[in-house]
Length: 390
Ligand SMILES: *Cc1c(COP(=O)(O)O)cnc(C)c1O
Image (cartoon, rainbow, N blue to C red):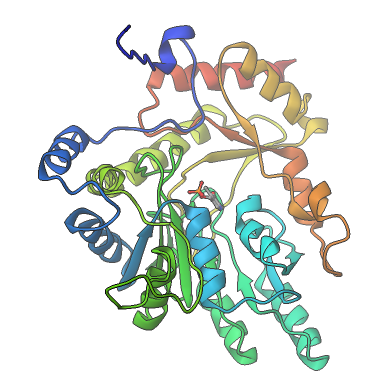
């Protein structure tokens, strides 16, 4: 029998390929993997996931954490912990990834999408306050409000939480892309009732796949942990009062995540430096601007994102994206707003997002990996400058 041989090297096929946000090994992963395998603790339980959870609590300042198989799983558990019921509404930002609400709609909830504000590109607190006041008067409050951290930029979570508290509506923060980001001095997700994080392959820190749900409320995380591990009641036999999920994070992946997390602050510094490189390299181009960073935020710059006004720039976003792709450089349009997605046609009334729609039309995420080399970044800059020159 031929030996099983798997070759995986993304650089083999296209030596000059530049990816949007590839994993960046921190150095400790191999040793951590070896130690984990040798210990025999490979299941989704035991000392390594526990250590990963403690490290996430330390990095985020959110004391209670359960590590799970993905960010989407963390969101799903969050919705279960908030007792989301069929027919309930869940409000989130128009400008996000479908996973923010996919578990909720699969549970029978209705999604409603609110626009983002131009200063942060995250959920607009003013719109939220008005919409909650209207819904409160008619007794149609949502079961949860789900602000989203966008490309490493936090939603204004403290402000959003205060607005939601007035109406008794819990906040589940989709902080999947928020590791290392800060709002008003706090880490992404801190201040929400629940916060979901992701460690999938293209995030600033990866476990090779994984996520976490965090809260200041120990009981909520105990409930999430129970549901994540098949909702087994304490008994020698299998005993169940509800059904749960098999959402635990393998010790093997937790070991990778733990080694990666040690480098978080370095990764934020590297991504911010890459953003600065784009800002300097692309300065002075007419019609080109950057994702803003409000005074109350410190973005991780997980993805460096630009806006292209086709009139003054002389080319549109798609022209720039294709010019980069022709040179083996991956870039990606800003999220297509969810209120424009066919799957949400006929969704809850009141969904909108003209700011989000404009950002989708003009926005482009540039290669932002923390290991992006100066020569590759200079190529990206050169191609974009060339598009502008015509
Ligand atoms: C990555 C991401 C998710 C999903 O996380 P997974 O770990 O891939 O399931 C959800 N929401 C946002 C905003 C994300 O960026």
